[in-house]
Amino acid sequence: MKKTISMYWPLAVFVPLAAAAYLYVSGEAASSRATQAPLGADQLTAELARTVSYGLVGDDRVLPGKPMRAVASLQPAEAS
Image 1 (cartoon, one colour):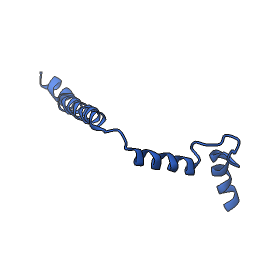
Image 2 (image 1 turned 135 degrees about the vertical axis):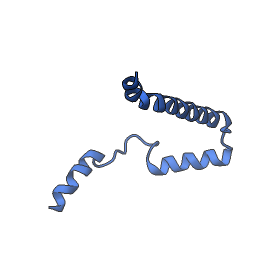
Image 3 (image 1 turned 90 degrees about the vertical axis):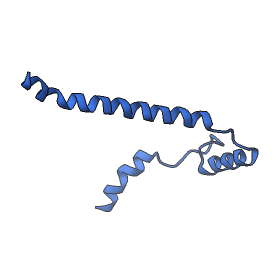
C-alpha cells in the first residue's frame, strides 16, 4: 500500500490543480467574450484605416516583392 501512494501522489496533486486552472482560464475567456462591446463608428473606421495602411486589405493587384520566408532565409546568407 505504501508503494502505491508514493507512486501516485504527483497525480493526486497535479490533476486537480490542472483541472482548476482549466476551469479558471475557460471562465475568463467566456466572460471576456461576453462583455466585449461592439466598436463605435470612430473606432471602426480607425481600425479599418489601420488595416489598409498595413496592407492587410485593399488592392489585390499590388503584391509584396518577396514573401516573408524568402526575406528571412536571405538575411543569414547576406550577413556572411
